[in-house]
Image (cartoon, rainbow, N blue to C red; front, side, top):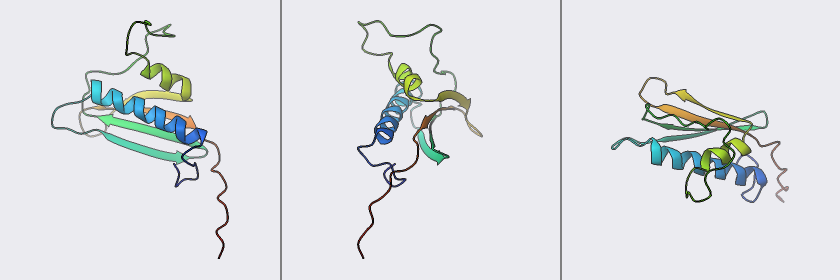
Length: 121
């Protein structure tokens, strides 16, 4: 993100880091198949960042339960997709192409990159 003009302390960078962390944690917790890895991909187009986390388990797809606004306050889990839902323009799940598994993706508005200060010559 920093290389793309969104500094480490920018809102876009911090939001992206949070969504990546939630999707990656879900892949490790719910999508892990022993001996197989997950794949993280970030792509940027037209002021939007697409985050994709692919795992090799295709029998468990994440979904928000209809009407879910908050998990039980006593539970230590169950907030990840609510965070992704709140921070992204859209998110979803697609089958993995050419192999078993799925890709969970989110699209974030990141706006235009920050102007870089001129480097003195």
